[in-house]
Image 1 (spheres, rainbow, N blue to C red):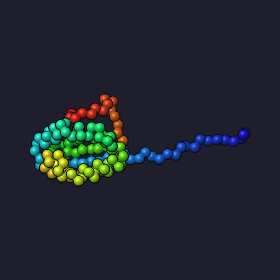
Image 2: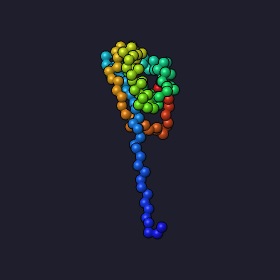
Image 3: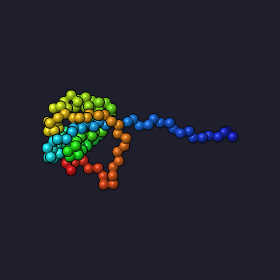
Image 4: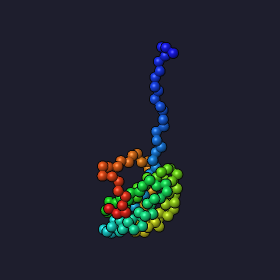
Amino acid sequence: VTGVQTCALPILSRPPAPQPGLTVRWSLVGTADDIVDELATYVEGTSHARFTGMSGLRFKTWRAVRGAWFEGSYVFASEEARAEFQASFTAVAPTSPVSVIVGAPPILIEPCEIIAVAEGWDGFEAKPRY
C-alpha cells in the first residue's frame, strides 16, 4: 500500500514485582563485649547451614555492629515465602537461638522491599564466617 506510514509503538510492560525482604534485629546494647564473637560462632556452626539451600530464600546476610545490634537480612523469592517465614519465625522469636544468646527477643521484625542487588568485581562469596 502506498502512502501508508507505520511506526513502532513501545511495548508496554509492567515493572518487575518487588523483591520481598525481611530484617530481624536484636539489640546488643549492654551485652558482653564478646557477644558478636559468640553470635559468629553460632552462625558458622549452625545457622549458616540451616539457611544454605533453603527453599524460597534467595540469600541471607548476618550483620552486626558491636555494642549496638545484630541482624539477619533476608531476600526471598516470593512474597508468599517471606510471609510464611516471617509468621513461623515470629512465633518462636523469643526462644530462638539468637534470642537465647543475646538474652532478649528481637527488637525488630520488619518486612521490606529489596530495590536492587549488585555483585562487585571480586564476585559474591558465600561463607559461614568472614
